[in-house]
Image 1 (tube, rainbow, N blue to C red):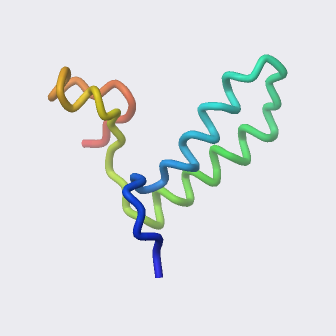
Image 2: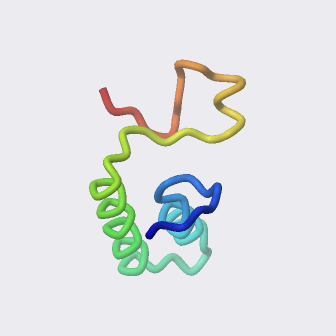
Length: 69
């Protein structure tokens, strides 16, 4: 059974990847593992697009995180 939290699908994987690439001691191998983990999550959950909460109110059709037609 999946968690009944309000957290968006694949949010943890996306957050970990974003935090990895912002670290001053950039670890490319670690970030690549996190990228692949996010990719697996996106495929398994059939995610089509990500958006940020504040983008929904300010940028209806100009989502800058990910676009998939």
